[in-house]
Image (tube, rainbow, N blue to C red):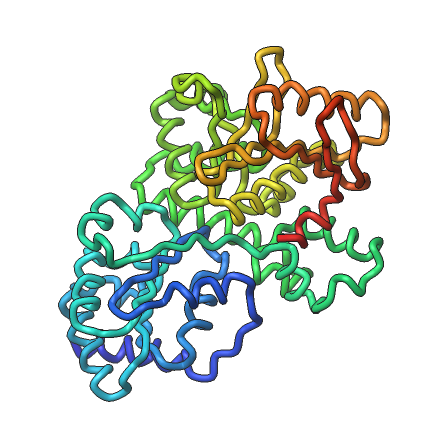
Length: 414
């Protein structure tokens, strides 16, 4: 136990003098901190979970780093006793368990900490599996959860040194938007644009090898990486998992497992089809979105043909941030028109959203309007929105009003 205690002291000492660039999520997260309750912060690796937790710690916390070999190999009891020893000297106002999925039986550790200490507990993890049914049972009524995404466009600009976007010319904002979509918005990438590709490749390798291959004991490492690369090359698409499996030489069952693994580590999000027929979403293919658009540019060797898909993916991430992954769907009308996104709020579809890179020509405009018109017949109370790169204003289609908004404006509205 002395080695574990020294490791905890060392990591706790790193919190002293920690300075952070504020993020939009900090205020909401702080409101979720309550004594004798655990706040689970989950999200893709390198999205800033530890950074946010350190901000909330305010130099007065015990830091249990689950990536330290001494800590992740310790028993829950050893860690618990070490935290008690440190707290007798420092009187922490918060306890922070980082990358908890690496710690054996971390559920028991969190439960013991909640029973003993009258302070908030922050638990972070790079897998949705840390908030499982077992956790719900063991910590019923004693935890809250928050999913953290890479930076919003407003925070991305802040990290790039732009505190007042409204003062920038639109051309300059548009240039930042292009960079935001091409390289994504991981915090470290935003702060080190000259190293963007190297950082993204490192994140990709860590997610494939450490978060998936090692965690789930996948033997077919090369096939796993091929599967991930195909996902990265094809954002915002209906995902035929079986076809991907056939193309890379794995069974349908293995392909289904791979997709589940990548969703659990937040590399992708799969959204279902929304339909009045309850069985149809179960039978229909899901649409796949990357958790950061920067992964696409790593592997796609085209000349920008997929810019519209990358733009749609950027919109998807922001919708997940605002409304939660479980409240976003796509829709296909009986006559074959597709709506990119339906937003559910309080069990009601409130928005139908199309994402259109260009709608300047009349044919493209009619296509988007017709799709919304068809879908609005099934969702009569929903607002109709088209997010574009260059057009804004309002169009009327019969009695229906359709709003057009530029992407950068819509992103900053959040």
